[in-house]
Length: 451
Image 1 (spheres, rainbow, N blue to C red):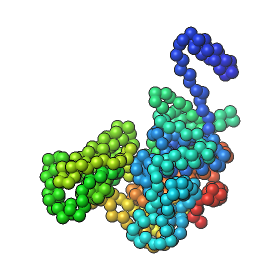
Image 2: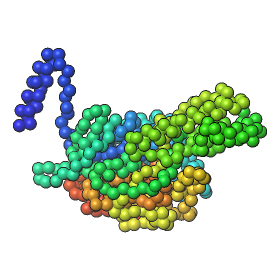
Image 3: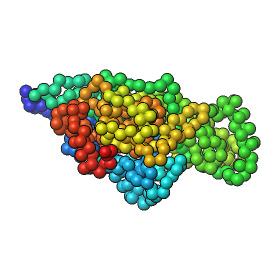
Image 4: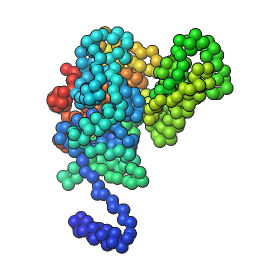
């Protein structure tokens, strides 16, 4: 029947085109094994790992490039991959970082030198445009089908049977077009738990969220030494500008001298990108803050010729929703370095909660401690054939403030991608997989797995 329909449509389309009519041709429903939604740090690695395991994998990204906060958000220092003198996170994410550093002729930090509380010394600065393109190349070479400018709109559970081998119908929207994907497994790497919410999973969040950060660079053309000598006058001008609304709290996140020296970034209080409206509001406020700073610097003696040199495409958002999983990682779990029987990945970063009024005061792990991620934290409670990875994994707020960083999102993403592929190929729910099998698969793809 379907063949006859295609023949009829083809004949009709040809006749209409010959008659001068414009014809819109709808593609057939797409079938695949695994769909990953969200092309940030977790999504890139999850999709690549899934495809490398032999699963037909589609990666859906609402934006124009891969990388998430690392690229679009301007946070071009993925980390941390090393702890206490040894590497704890490797695999596909590390492969991407290494290739970016190599191709751009950059140099990796000396990871054998302890950083103490200066953890940023082990961060790796990467060339953002190159990183985005290499992430794209990595996925394509792994066999991933990438779909930009597309977002999930509706999720419908299907009944798996001898004739139907899919568990989900995912309806997406792309520039006015609805598209349908039938798949066996899905992985939510949206950072907001959007896909999980559409599938009926429970999400968690606080009433107040951490501020976001908008990164940009202003060349003040001011002499820092002369500016430092006049700092009291500059601060007085700042207080007056704040009273009149010319600048606002959060505009100078790192202080006025930091901007004068070329280190520009702000705090965007209440930053949220979990809906289109909130994402729009967040980015408008971030960019308007930059304009206030630029105009203030230009109002200072010596700063009249200050210029905007560069800015990120979007505000970097630190937290919104988290998915409630079969286990919720607590901050005590994280700080103790607890290892579960189903731990699949390592995580290493200070507990890093940014507070509106006081900024951030990282709480570093005790020497020798490295946290882990249990598989159950990647499994949304009450929903099968669905995994979550990245910033929105199941965790309490303080634990999440450390788990949200890029290297950890990559390690969790690789675990989720492996599990999704194995489950799809075996036609089982991820929770039914043998943990040892997932660990073996991850090791085969150069991941470092807790034992």
